Image (cartoon, rainbow, N blue to C red; front, side):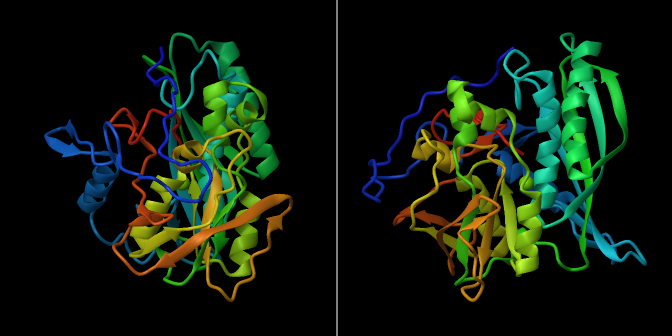
Length: 353
Ligand SMILES: [Mg+2]
């Protein structure tokens, strides 16, 4: 079963002069519509509709609900805030059983939630795993899946405290991760302000390149992403207020960050591109699980943290909320859209969460 599209990358990047020829969507663009239950929406729009359906409030113990990497909860009497996130990990959408070993599938399934905790500067505490087993996933597959998941759980101090198991038409799981962060200290998507510098950690496009070539360091990067937990806590302690993880691609995730903050973003510096990856992969490829964050000019951001490069790529500006400019041209969100069934631009295949 393979519902992912084959890679094949066309680009409108001019190859290194620092200017784009144009960044208009081709084919099924970012505004592409799909009808679901009478609604004609793309994925981002459907998520926004769902947020509108949710009752307001949640009480004084809900600090932030849908719309960020994690919900932020403040239980009565708790010394810290709690973070909660949930992520689906489905065969044929997020991994292929024939190319992704069960060990790596388990590891990646947990990494998605841990990366959300990292984005808020938190520490993971607990996780719950609900697993649906398709015909190809026997007891041996489950054993290897859990071995991978538990290796990462142990290493990050995350206790597995339960879940569910069922036979299903296809293999997939949902992983809930709970974490903690000092009261009021969580980094959030809605805290970017005009004048702040935009940074990314690591190198971008490696996971998408790995998915395309299935070899070398890029394939390893795809199979075994590393949640940036220590970096997230470091940035929070440094005074960074706005961050998110790069799961769906920079173009999509920067749009989300800017929109949540009611600001626009200008990218006018070279991106840190993974060795061998193309600019399209760095801009639109998902599953890099690096951190995207903004910082006021007074904050001194080092060029590296524990070997992970931190690169300034642009500046937050006043403007249409969510608008992203890339070297003088509008950059449309081009990451994965489940309901368009493909990337919003081009045909690169990669999908985070
Ligand atoms: Mg996220």
